[in-house]
Image (tube, rainbow, N blue to C red; front, side):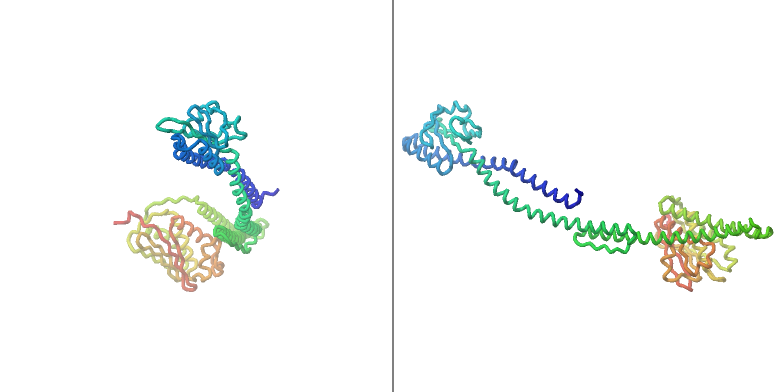
Length: 471
């Protein structure tokens, strides 16, 4: 049989019900009999005290006759089902509620029977009674002397029968409760199994690529939360799937173009299509394309290290102003070609930060490089650093073509290039800003972009101000 939740619940119900019935009719029945014996003992003790104080003392003082005393004993047996013996100090029965006294010396039955408040449920009267008896002994004191004993006996079968009658009622009530328990198990199954089946169905849909499958769960909030989490996961999987498709398309495009150039020019030189005197020109093109592939591969590996938290930061204290100056100097040639002016603005002579200097230099390089690429000829680029509380704000602002509004959030995506920039950015890999964001986030800092198409773009990122800079 298939092990389903329903079969497990039914099996649990059967086992629990059977165990409860067994427990009630074994251990529970024993407890009930013990409770009834205790109640019977208390009842016998009360009757013994009543007999001793009200009748036997009068009998000892000859105020009542033996016949009258036996009549009272018979009434006790009739109404309470307790057989009463009056025994003298030698152990001989001289009065019996049954009628004629049994000719038995109780000392010979059990020497302990005549101990005060002695209780026995053993079959010590096998020669006297036809069934096991529950007995209680009480000493009779008269004038501060032992004058005899009261022995009260009741049937063990009557106690057992009474216990069984009580448990018949309990068992009937329990059997009436079983249908309610079954309905309760049905309700539990409805609360658990039905949502699980919906979750399983949704998981199969998502695993098959149907990320648009609508998962709607009702009932317990835990299942609704789980359903929301799975729906969110499906959305993330859909985004990941789209990202992977775009990633493959982009990387195929960025690899195919230089490889096509390299192969085409190499074959042309090999078959003599390109004259020998022009081969240097095309060899330089091949080297340029090979450098693009190397840069693309290196950037991908660097991004992978950041995402897997494998890139360790070498945190030191340094002057961000000096790093900005040195990075800006590397773009002197590019700025001269496009006649771009780099304006460096610092709020203080020194701004000491705690960061990985080489990686922050990489961030600055990427941002300034982008600013130059997308700036107009004869324009300006402003690079600034200023102190704000315990942070240093670094800004790279250009007055170039800007970024379309619908593309601002996408500039951090791998390989993303706006349509406007794709034709101009021949050397770019589309990974520079992705790497920049990963570096800043690895420092637990933030980077933002503000841009207006046709006006310009500003990138702003924060760095932790060094404690060494506090005066």
